[in-house]
Image 1: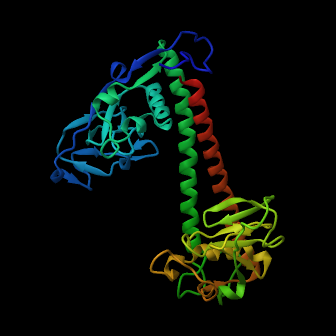
Image 2 (image 1 turned 90 degrees about the vertical axis):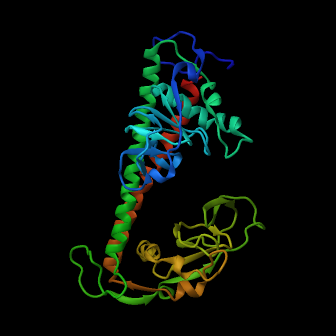
Length: 373
């Protein structure tokens, strides 16, 4: 039994003590039952089948598999809970669906949904599923789950509506970020010449003439990162293939920005390093010989399929030679600047949406702890 019987933050006008209830007492729970495998299809047929977390996208059922056999079902508007790894993961459905044995359907309102989301994030279900086969939870566990519920349905609705509005904003920024990533991918393909072509398929107004064949080694100096463990703690960031690691008191580059690309492990995700910085020995840093061309050269790095330059049969590995010998095409300096600026602004928009998304997720996590018991 929770020590508190009311939340830290409440909407004005609500003062009643909350009640502890079992999920099965306040909601109808339907445990899934998988149809015969011979009835499955990846093309639309009679019924949408929900088997587990793979059938949920951004918290909603995303049709992936269909079946001609109806076993257990959930209706549009119901909640969907994964009962096998990952046990407790939540979603909703806007379709009538058939429930496979990896999920349960719950007839609950938005308050119940958000309460179950909080329980999942707190590890409630993982503790109950610990030691079970495939990290699963059964009907007794789901129906017997205890949660604190306001007695006033209006308070439930207000809380549910508040979190639904945050979820809508999260989805908005998530989808806009995904859309911009698709725009960037398309524009990288069209703003830079394809193999065998001398000009790109899309050009900004005022630019003409063939692009020049070059080697990346003509455009950048490829340098190796170094061990940082002998350095003292400071304010200069250390970067690895996964991004920022920690801070030290010495830089490998104090005044020249560079492009970082993995030497081992992750070799296909280059990113810009702003001076001053230190990089570990699994990361090359490539300093443009023309510092004004940093953004354009970064675009060139993103356009290369680095996985094809993997020189290892085990852990992915990239060499200086492979970078230096990579063929690229370059236009005039003004066109380089125009292209570089375009993608820099696009990256800025993507970062803004990502930052907003992360902030909203933190707000939701914080408020779930304060507005639910």
